[in-house]
Structures are given as C-alpha cells and as structure tokens.
Length: 287
Image (cartoon, rainbow, N blue to C red; front, side):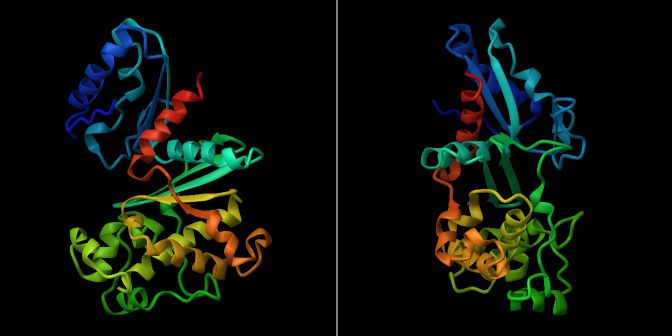
C-alpha cells in the first residue's frame, strides 16, 4: 500500500505515519520497518542533526517515534535517503554480479546527494557521505575536460560563485536545480522547458561527471547509479559518461573502453520511487 502525508510539522507528519502503520502493527503483520530520512542525520543520537536545513526537524528522533507502534515489537532500521537507495541499487547489481561488493547512488534535484555501499554495507563512518559538497572540477582539474563555456562566462561576467551557501562551487552548487536556473537565467520551474541543446545541461553534466570521476578514483565502486529530478533530462547520461571517460583518460583501466561506461554509470530502475525501494531494502536486510 502507498500512503503519502503532507509536509507539515514533525509531530503532525510522524503522527500521520504512525496512524497508517498502526493497523499493521496491531495485527502483528509489521515485522520490519525501514526508514530513509533526509539528512544530515546523527546516528549517535538517532535524530536529525542540528545542522539540518529544516529547522523544525532538528533533533527530532524519528527512530523512537516509529518504534513500538501499538505496543508491537518489530525491527526498525534507519539510514539516509541516499544511502538507502544505494543499498537497493546494490541488491539489484548483485542479481547479475554475485561478487559485487560496492555501489554508489547519486541523486540530483534541488540538491545533490550521494549514498555509498562498500563491502556490502552502507557507509556511515564519521557521519555519512555528503558527496554533493565535493568541489566541482574547474579549469585544470582534468586536463582533457575544459570548464563549460556557460559556466566560465557566468563566473567571469555575472560573478557566479555557485548556489551552495556554505560550499560555493560544489557539485550541488553547480548542478542543483537552483544553480542551473541561475546559470540559464530562468526560474527553476522553467528548466523542463529548455531544449536538450541548451548549454546549461553541459554545466550539469560537467558537475555530475566530476562527482562520478571523484567517486571512481576515491571509492572504486562497481556501479554508479544516478537519479533525481534533473536526470529526467535523459540526454545527461551520455554527456556524463563521455565526460567521465575523458576525465579518467584511461587511468582506471576497467573503464578505458568508453562502452564500459554504458553499464557503469546508469539510471535507477526505481525512478522516483528510489527512496521507497531503499527503505524496503533496509527492512528486508533485517529478516
């Protein structure tokens, strides 16, 4: 069953979720619950971190609120809304590659998020991955890939410094929807009306390719899956693969053949339901 609750206060939103789950918990058909939450998330305190851009949700303990509904005991597991899809995509990868141990998931919409699975487990470590904050590769970072002309022009003539309050010219600061709208001089809602040939899409592809190349060199995932609203622009996949191939320049030998990137950097099979499938995958792992 699918149930959506309106964006509201934490108390109201969580109460709506509890009301939906109560019948399942009461009849003991709820055996495990997976939660894919926005971040930053504090796994030590099990709550939304104080640095969250959603002030009302800071320090809210989602795990506690959704545990023990109707007095029923069941497994509850929580991870970020990018780590959870990374787990789901990793499980899909294993269907065709049983030896696979890693996968990266990138989502690009209003912001950019990165989830990672390494050695079969979602990466947490110090906190959790925040790959959208990686600096975007600019002139000279990859000698075979020049900075897109529109990005150069915007930096020089319009003082474009990236739409990321704390990290400026990050991947998110260049490829997020508000950044792309500023580069194209349109409203974010007008981005879908732009033609595939508009130069702003090269800026998006460049930033996301920069993220993919960095992940490949640092983490060496066996697959990178990209989703999110911006990637509804399907031409971006070919552009990203081409740029990653040029950026790596044959150094990562399993990807030296351009054709290999067609199965290395792929679209999510889950589309807009990546988060739901991610939460389900977290729950299934407890069984």
